[in-house]
Image (cartoon, rainbow, N blue to C red):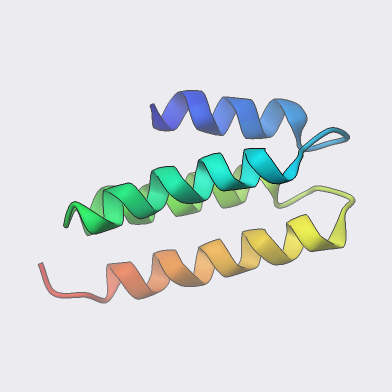
Length: 79
């Protein structure tokens, strides 16, 4: 599912990414986080961030930075 969501974000990032696309990615990563799989959640946040990081939309760039920060926090949690 990570590959599918990442591909979806990347395909739409340049011009047509909508609020519901960000919600899909956030919900997916949060579900992994809540399941206790912090490693996979971190991977999801990083993958999703990379998919939208080069967007021309500053708001999307800010979201990507926020997701990167969450990924770093998850990586610092004990297993």
